[in-house]
Length: 239
Ligand SMILES: Nc1ncnc2c1ncn2[C@@H]1O[C@H](COP(=O)(O)OP(=O)(O)OP(=O)(O)O)[C@@H](O)[C@H]1O
Ligand SMILES: [Mg+2]
Figure 1 (cartoon, rainbow, N blue to C red):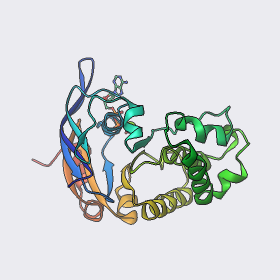
Figure 2 (figure 1 turned 90 degrees about the vertical axis):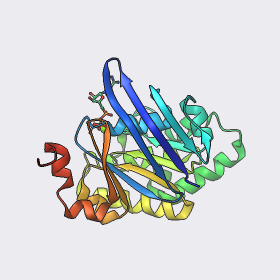
Figure 3 (figure 1 turned 120 degrees about the horizontal axis):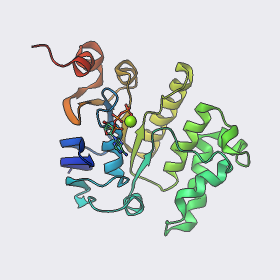
Figure 4 (figure 1 turned 180 degrees about the vertical axis):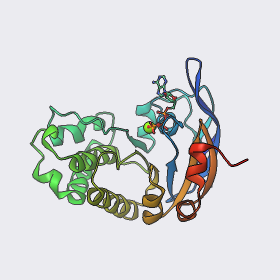
């Protein structure tokens, strides 16, 4: 059975259709990149999966249970967590306070301390800076914090929106190293929005290419880097 099944998903903002007829499935433990030009609907797709925006229609299933219609907290409680575009760190709160933000809804409060420990082990810099204001962290450290915050709800599926944004290539290497380590360690299923097909190919995984609210290609990320599919997505397929 697939971990995640999306059927005919649509998102609209007023009259604007941001996402239309999006269908795909993801198997447990898979790493799926989503790429495509600005405005293609990548963030809308992730937000709809996480319950942060309401779908106009369609169905989202995780482990065969229907998620569509549930709010973000209920979805997080079932094991799906999102790292939003732009990180949305609370700059004035400490690193540890940022980590605790999403844990209020957890029933297994005793496990929260264990998860904090796991996160601190994965990202020792966050332990060192636990009492520092999050706004004092570097961009890369803030991205690690955003990822860690999502991990604090002990998800099985994690959605990461543009982790590379605004980071130097070496820092991006480090972020992806940590993400892939965590995926192996926890058996996570991951969906990552990544503009660079070269980067996706290097990290490895499947890629869905979006354009104008639709998935226009689906395949191995290495094939995408070699072919001109991204160019086609920007300029339209040759006629
Ligand atoms: N809250 C909103 N209200 C109205 N329109 C929105 C809203 N969020 C996104 N849109 C529009 O929906 C479309 C899809 O946006 P979305 O942010 O999902 O694209 P994206 O692929 O993530 O783009 P980017 O690469 O710039 O992050 C765009 O036309 C965008 O302007
Ligand atoms: Mg986006």
